[in-house]
Image 1 (cartoon, rainbow, N blue to C red):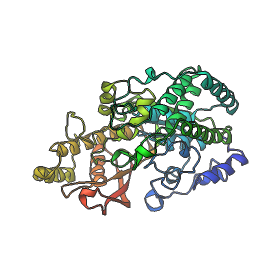
Image 2 (cartoon, one colour):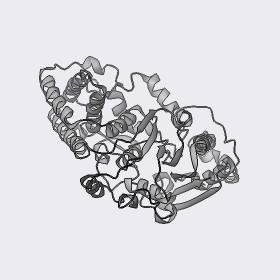
Image 3 (spheres, helix red, strand yellow):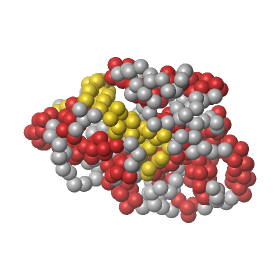
Image 4 (cartoon, rainbow, N blue to C red):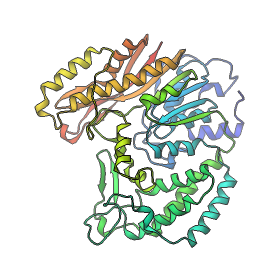
Length: 446
């Protein structure tokens, strides 16, 4: 496989902190064996807001492209195929593509799946220019029609009888024009791109913000509400940012990137191509429903049309929360540490804010077990699974996630298992808000 042209390599080095060393010479020469657990960079991308493609949409806990490239280097050879069962912001997919490696990524959230597809699709900058001009002309002659937003929950749009609303009426009307114009785009890839751009500005053009506790109203929101002009300006700015990356990387390698929209616990069964590296970070068992973070985008952009759609999406996510009732079962493979933790949680049931938390924790590791079983099936003999996981705590019982996963992985059949703590995370306010929960890397091999 050819090395990228000099201009592309220079651009890659500008936007990514670490480039695999096999780009600097003959691609057939194996790179030196390195341990990811000794040299791994930061697992989060909080300082990477200006990174190409990462800057399209803000993800609070996306891991960095440098982490993916470090994982690639740790293999000691050039991989042919990389998999990510929890696609999220698409870091693994886009980094693999820029490094001319085939990749498969799975993402259960339909909006995030479209974000990833838009990043890895080989869109033509000239085609985007033409469609942008057509879009602006169509937007100018399109009347607002709130009927296209009739499916939204009651709190979304301002009316006289409501105490709170996410979007002022004038912004909602303007959104209806944008959505009508996006629906009129005939080419699916271009339509998806415009939808992603609109999704990237929805929260900034609303009365709410999203943090680790979910959706909250901004302070003094009633006296400082967004306007339709703000929506136009932010959409234009966000479009230009994404367009710049499309233009800058128009000649990027055309490796095969498959984006599967589905539940990682079952979707990995669709993958048949052997995998050299599985790199991912699953939701943490912190009883937070991650679909809530993207609730506004999912509803406004039409991915959710009714409460049943929302329920189905929640059921397709890992059992890391208790917001909906689902069947709970323990992993099939043994973990002594999980059994001890489970027993301790049961002893503290009266202190828990939800009595289903012990069962949820057990089911979480059952779900991780399903994913790791498929990873074991797909992984080549020289390959690795590298995952970023985080601990949780309930009623002073610490859920040591990396330790439990390591025990389950050994039972599944992974012969080489290693873990390393990489940072301390802050616990919830109920637990004192101190940095006392570990985020760790788990590395698995045959």
